[in-house]
Image 1 (cartoon, one colour):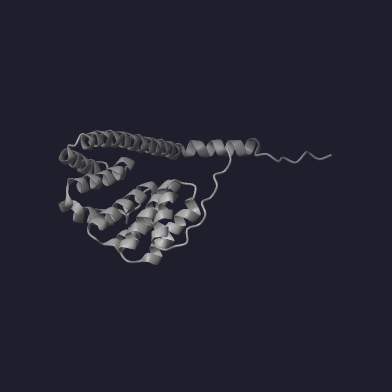
Image 2 (cartoon, helix red, strand yellow):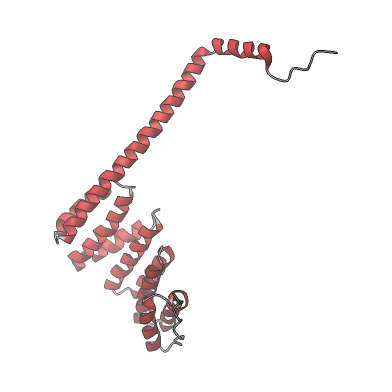
Length: 228
């Protein structure tokens, strides 16, 4: 009988690989060093981003405290610095919303700035919950400018991006109100009807029923709450 067939790499293949490694030691060392450098760079980046998020969150908490204590100018200044220094963080996104809330609290002279700032902000890439707040705040600022149709459109975008049903219902109520003021009764009825159809078990449905009735819409029978 002949010798069995060799299926593995065998001693010759092992010697060939060993010889290749000896001849290419420098290249192997460089490759290994490159991997180490990449891993270190990734670690440094992740660590830096985490530190940045932590510092931004601390700055946001401090600015919130200033706003709650009534020191609006200091809060606005701190929030502006936070956004400039820590742009791209979650805290900076939330600071953008809070800053414009503070501006609206400071007086009507800030409304145009708020509208301009938020219109630019909502064109960027941000988490949905942040965008929903931004669209809703923009709607409120546009209402102050008596731009009710534009406000209704902003509230409509807030509905689309909101991540909780109760917020969607609230923004639909806002949309219905501004459409009614703008003279679009049909659009207002549609907004209130949507609240009742989709969120009839929520507290916001009570106001939707009243408003829909005032506008001459058909008010559906209240849904029974599920047992238990």
